Length: 158
Image 1 (cartoon, rainbow, N blue to C red):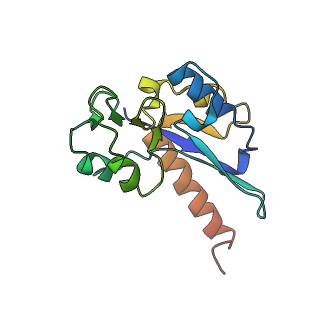
Image 2 (image 1 turned 120 degrees about the vertical axis):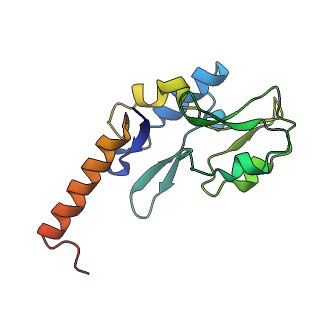
């Protein structure tokens, strides 16, 4: 059963524990700029949105990679970047429409969320429940119900 990283921005407080957990898991250091998940803050609206790879069906980052370093790992399945194959051209970073791919200047390689091989550290460390890792069907059912509820309550009318 395929799982997805689900984000509930209403619960995100921008504590950035997800960023710290991610950078420590992947880089062995608490360095938010090396995190594969980034919290974008909209101060005027009081909204915080964690941004992470959405694992597109046809990822442009994979399509533009000249070496094949950016590829889909069918085991999880997620977009991955093989550091050994990456030549540091940043084409994948530029191609991602969501800004999810980034670049490690020290290692001179691109990086992207790999869902920690199916056990995302960001989810385990999100104390407010803004992040969850659930079956795609569960997320879809919850969204269908929320949509139906908004229609039933007349909230869909502008």
